[in-house]
Image (cartoon, rainbow over all chains, first blue to last red; front, side, top):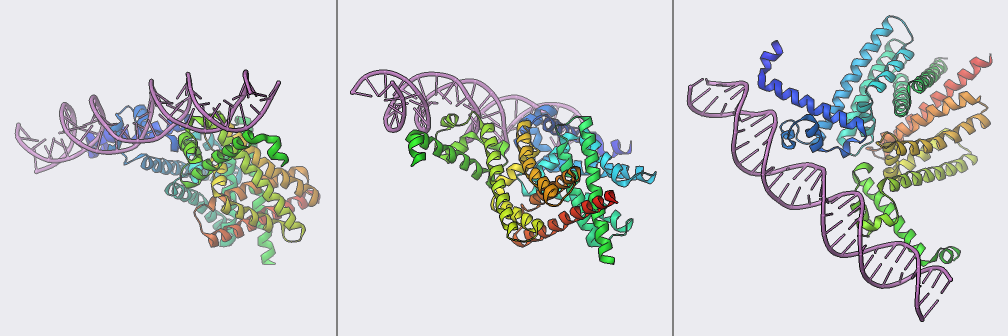
Length: 209
Length: 209
DNA sequence: GAATTCAGCGTACAGGTGTTAGCTGATCTG
DNA sequence: CAGATCAGCTAACACCTGTACGCTGAATTC
């Protein structure tokens, strides 16, 4: 109510077709092609508007793309929050986090692929945007390792950077596999993260003694 | 001599323009755009031949792309061999390998970016080709860990998979940085790989006892 | 030396691309 | 209710794309 009346009928409709454009782009992405070879005209067509109307919402395709990256980051952070809640109810933080992450990759393959793809992609602006999202992920992990596990700041940083790299790379391994294989990858990733954790633990001990 | 006479003038010239096409593609790749938005016409133009002559060498752009991936894999394996030689003359295997790797990334940014990009790219065939190259890298590492370091097969596998993930991810971090920053990333990567190695060591001890 | 092969070329086509300019009609504003 | 706003439209532009067809002339083969 508040939203519909405060926004007005016009603004509401505009937001709607804006979403339609975003969804159209995500659909086309999931299909087969990378973002760089995505066509303004086809996106507009799938969104059900004239090609020229696209410009009422985004200056160009890149602006749409950056919006998509942000959307993905948002979803990812929601996912993290959900994982946290499950951990509070007990369970291994590593296992729960990674299984949640893998589920996310399975459910949102298109958008996750965009993230990984543009991380190494053509536009510096895109790469920076993705790197920013990865930093969010890493920062929350650092906080946990420092505050809950008592690691020193540098060791927490080193550790979580490694973990983020391993986990996101494992996400890329999930593109062409079925559910059971994905479970295997998850299991392997869990063991690898534990390897890192154990190594950090050993390092901490070595420094204390 | 043997080559020029056994190949014949015609075949020799053909090979030459084939290389020209490959080099042209690599140049354009390094510039700004991903492989998917690479144009047959522009590649042909840079190679100095008519667009239609392209088909005398490759069935389509994808075939050229797969050739590029193979080329990159070859260069990467040469790099590994060089690193081995340096290790035989003494020095930390981790440090030497990673510094060599980082140097490779700095020298061959275009082709390395292609590898990382197509790893998550649009074509399944491409992804498989890249994955094959990563497997080479991993396999050599497994061999070393098993034979030289005496790790059990499963632990060597787990460990080297994690290391490959970390190192290649770190390679992606090098795209937008200068030499000193790259050295820092190399240093961080070395520490992270040591973290994994230490964790694997601890795991081995735990299982033996 | 005649016949064959074939890398490279020019022309041409059908279809896609991003973007400009200007119109329409519903919504919002005073 | 008159006037301004503005999302979406159509038409049109200049340009780029992959690829089919058939020719040419030098290298190769017999």
